[in-house]
Length: 192
Image (cartoon, rainbow, N blue to C red; front, top):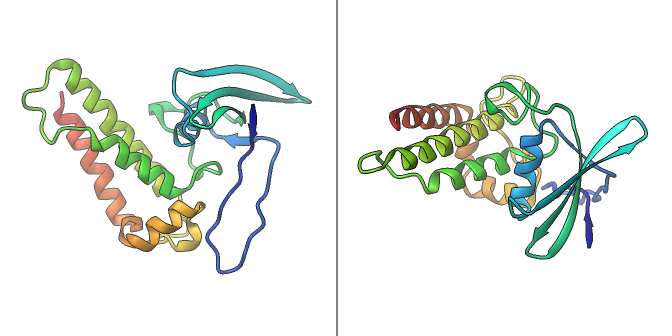
C-alpha cells in the first residue's frame, strides 16, 4: 500500500523543493473528500479511521485508486460549515484555485442546458451539481486577497493550475468568477 502525503508542485521560475508533511490540513471533511476525489480515490471505496497523534486527531482514509490502495491523512479543522461550503473565510491550504475551478467545470459538464424534459430526480441532481459548482467558485474567490482583480501565475499551486492559467488567464479574473458563480446559482434555482 502506498502512503500519500501532500506534495505541492508550485509553478515558479526557480525550482522549489517538494515538501513532504506528516498530514494534510483540511478545513472541513467536505474539503478532504474533494481532495481525494481529485486524486482519483473512488467515492464509496474509502475506509476511514481516526488516530491520535499526541493531542491531534487525524482522519486516515484508505482508498482504492487507479494506482492501488493509498492512504490519505488529514487533520480536519471543522466537521461542517453552514451551506455546505468547503471552508471558512480563509482560502484553502489543501487545494488551489485552479483545482476548485476545474471541479466546478467537471460538475457543470453533465448539467443539461434547460430543465425542460427532466423529471424531479434529474432536476434535483442538476440543482445539486450547479450549487456545488457555485460553492467551488466561492472557494476560488477566497484566493483574491488584498483587493486583487485577477490571480497571478504565482497563485497557482499545481502544475495543472499553472497550465490552465497560461492557457486561460481570464478565467482567474475576479469579476468573471463572481458572474459565473451567480449564473450557476440562478440556473440551480430554475431547476425547481
